[in-house]
Image 1 (tube, rainbow, N blue to C red):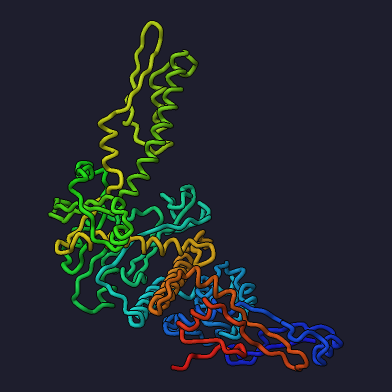
Image 2: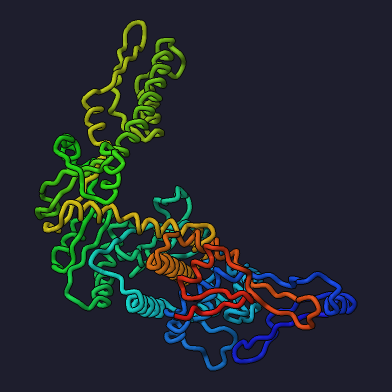
Length: 560
């Protein structure tokens, strides 16, 4: 005998769950009260999926997409918007491939939350539906989505953070693609083709406001130049005010053309970093000219009597990219100590290797009788350790007895290098900003990097590796990842407003353990569905969204 659950799918009654109870004798025993007090027939994940749908309820991604790509006259099954939504929900909870999506949903309470014919959630159907979304439609969907984010969440646009990353793919070299190109991969997979992603994030709320995909071999500064007009145009349109915007970038975006564009647009300002390698004299500024910056972290360190660990800064001016800019050099003592320790360790490794080289030269060993060959070995050693070769001076002399070798440290070069440890150079055109505001804005770039780390999480979002083989599908895949990241950030923000400081990873993992249970009570003829008793942390999250689970296992709104 079976228990069947029926729900309306596309407006029609459909069996969404069927559970085998056993033989008639076993069922009779259950109904007659001869079995245990409560028999669990089916246990499904509920909490995390409910939470994901709760985030989407105000934003309605499905409605946005269906407005741009409406259902066809003869189209059956889930709409295009629903295919996107079911993908995003999965990436918010436990990302799997399209091939495994239906099986994953079978273990969840999706039929109680948002019923769907799971036989339709196949990779083939995804490709067919996604083929209807071209690049212009995706741009329109993105614009509408972020407009709705703006209206619902009201993020501040006064200070924006922009950064880029890339995702490797296993796409064959023979597959045509404008996006998938070989370049310097941030995960170290340089031999694989990759796709670039740019993300603009509001500093205060950490919410994405714009995203862009670009070829994997395009330099970050070139991509920044290509999207500036569109990106700031969108943000200015969302904001619809005359307040100025400041974009925080890193040194990879620096170029003469980019800053000329910013200079010409009086509303847009910048904060960027600058390589200490190209300004070594500035980076070597004596520490007695630095002052402790008024940062929250520094205040905490001083309360803990750790003044020596406080971040310090030296402020000056300088001409960069054709104009005078405000320049701040920061010094982080903890970073300096770490770099000094690592550097000394590498120098000692090189010294030991040089001693062995010198011994082999003295012993006239084969392959060690040519000065150029020995120098080449030294250069390869420095390259392997990522250390400049000018920290040691090597000397070779040829005499009647053969080749001799000596070496010593270059004291000047070492002192110059050590003076730059823990130093960072920040440049801005915000002359009226305090030193603390400039430093804090630059430090806040970690928020975009945090989004990228989330996108690489194996459970949540999981943007890489990109397993799509056409540019159109790559764009749609990355859009679902950006939406999932945005929803997870909204989740964190809403919890913070309720005084709950937890990461999206922690909350989702916790809520996954809140189950919906279909059970048969002793002596009952009909099974019932109820929710488990939540843990303290689960109840806290439910309460933050205005819900509680009653004593009879039913999710109910909290009456105010």
